[in-house]
Image (tube, rainbow, N blue to C red; front, side, top):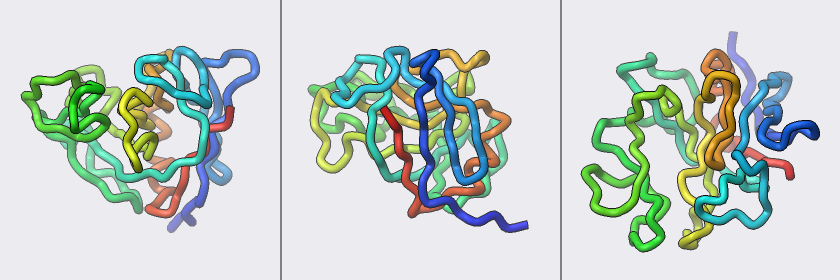
Length: 177
């Protein structure tokens, strides 16, 4: 059965808990975790907020040693142990994929905690990149109990496959304030 692609994924913050919300992709509704500070219109590096706005989804990454290649219309790239993401505002590669080892501040994409077994690269602060406005804003897998993120959107591992099957290169994600 072929699913039709959704054009927009909408993320709504819960009125009861600003660190949680719901993600809607067509008729698929998924509980999600948001940043520890909820959502923000004026996102800054390290503020713990998920940025409000409408963004492209640039590509997806996955851990080939943890999950089989997901079915999706997005550009898909396996994560390698040498992949990092620059979060250092002094680095000219700020908010980009970087090779490890990296002498500047970065996140490891190859994580032990499974949060990045699937990662969707949300086009926050990408064109143009403005240093200090936030980096590594992803849709990724949630911690047990949907604990808050550092500014990303996170969903339960059991739901990511269903979401990936419904999205493609023209899908946008809208985080509502």
